Amino acid sequence: MRIRRSLSTLLVAALIGGFGTGVLNLTGPGGFGTPASAAPDDKPAPHYAGVRIVRAVPGPPSTPRFSLPPGYTLVAGGRHQAASRAEFTAFVKGPRAERGVPVTVHWPDVYVGSVIATDTRLPLHRHTDDPHRVSFVLPVVSSSPDANQATIQVWSVLSRSTASGLHWRVEHNDPDRATSPWADVPWPAVQSAAVVNWMVAAEAVLRDSGLIAEARRRGHFFSLMGFETNNPLHPDNPPHWHLAYYPGRDRSAPRAHVPHLWVDERGRTFYNGMDVQGQGRHAFRAGEPARIHDADGDLVLTLTIRADGGLDLTAPSGPRYSIVAADGDFGDDVEVVRDGVPWRSFASRDDVKLGVLVVQVRESGSTAPHRTTIHRYDALTGVLADG
Image (tube, rainbow, N blue to C red):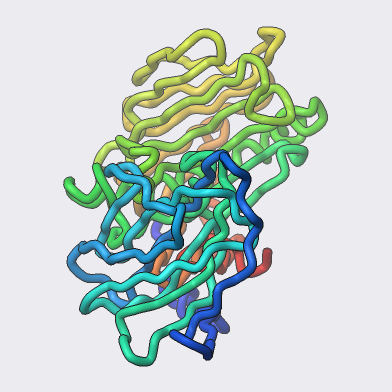
């Protein structure tokens, strides 16, 4: 069943409003005032800040020049400095500065559109005498670069509280933001789209089966996640998605089960590398049941990869759900079969340039959308427009 044709129309209709650029016009000598900052200790512990310098228009990757205050430097190495067609990512190291330090960036022949730190568009000062130079105030508060991965992670959290029984985030993969290894291989367009379809269908299965409600009752949660193509701190490959189970309130829960469901060039699942806390990784392929247990060893859910690249999800009691694609292309749309009977079909479209994710769900046999959900988000941070 094809239900994606109307998604483009819905995307256009969704584009009402937008996110501001956050530009400040400052005056004074040099056009940039020095902000107040906490006086450093005699031997302050180093802190870090990630920053993304985003081009107004994507172009060939290049490196801008940074001007930093005394005591602050850029962290060296390919993990901490990365250029893509859309932006340049860097990490600053120096004394802790909650109120921020002044930074100036000069990028010859490149117009800077935005500067991102954590999930915020920083206010910018644009130098009237040099259109390729911008200044901004950058807080330096993270204990390590890894502690500030939020700066380079562009995803939307559709279900945030683990107390709800489900934590769900959708990664927004933009080909212009791709960094190694994704900048050096064919762009995984089908896989990126398929992973969102997989998660949308899996969320519906977990909810219809009562598994989310039972996890919530027990103080446990499921977690749905995709993969990133723009994080040099975490080369997240090959394309995959997660349907994890944490028997507790957070990710430190004992005996957590974290499947890594790899998908091929048509979005078909062909391998499950399931990490079990305290037991390492277990490998599963088509026809091999991967059993998810709670901390007491009781069965919660069984995942079995199908020969057609689909996935069977079976709880200890209740129906068996099969996520399949009629033509084997999981990047287009997917169907869920419940106990052998077609149930619902799911399709999504994520416009990472505009910041609009549209999801459609139809009852099998129906021509009208059962439900259409539009998620608007900041295309540079993933933050949902409605919070």
